[in-house]
Image (cartoon, rainbow, N blue to C red; front, side):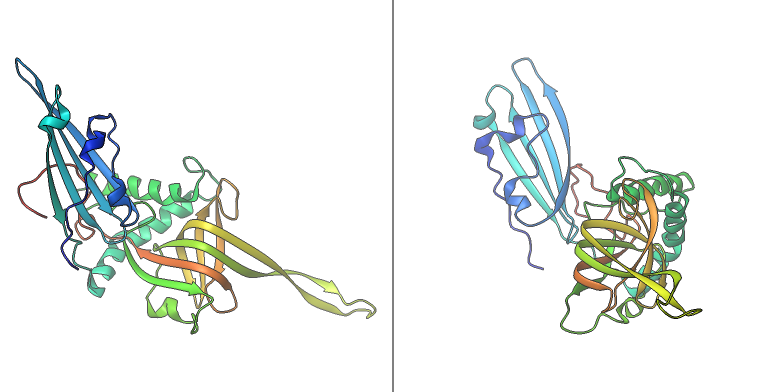
Length: 293
């Protein structure tokens, strides 16, 4: 990846003087999904106040980070402003061994946490809140016991992507879950997805044939614009998940999605493996360090 060039900071708009600051900037948002953090410091002397704003932006697709430090005098922001930028490249992609260790450390705890919430409502009842709250709670527990905490979700990125499926697809999607080693505790992020789910129903009498019964079946079509779910089991092309605001409106329930050619009709799914903070580049901090990470 080529080194990141400095961004247009649009200092003439004086966005840095607002509280909260208008950050990330449009030039940063143009690169894709991102999250941010900032801190303020003040230095008072007899004649004026020096203000220092430090901001950090994390690009969730690549995990690259840019930090910006802006210093100015309160009496004359545009005449005294000085801006600096630092660009931190994405962390090294984890190996298969790294991903296996991450699953052993976090996967089962994530799945168990999600299963315990079935039948309840977590936070505001949105799908993303379920995994956000799970990782936050588990991170606090891991820190309490001196263990490396899991990397928290950054937007709709939940660790390291291990598989992307689209439908309709040029080739077959069947068997790809096994090839990617999707496991219990991984996270699904779905976009514009349409699933056809065949459900079993109670046997019914065959009309006009005394004593004859036939096995019943029903069809359920599920459409999801943006949706997040926790994997709790994988059988062939079918994934059992715990989800919120999916099969249960505003609450947590279990569902099964078929990612094979007969189940997933349209859309995209990205499967994430939750990793530790260090492997994911560390927690986002708006501190101005002298060294790069």
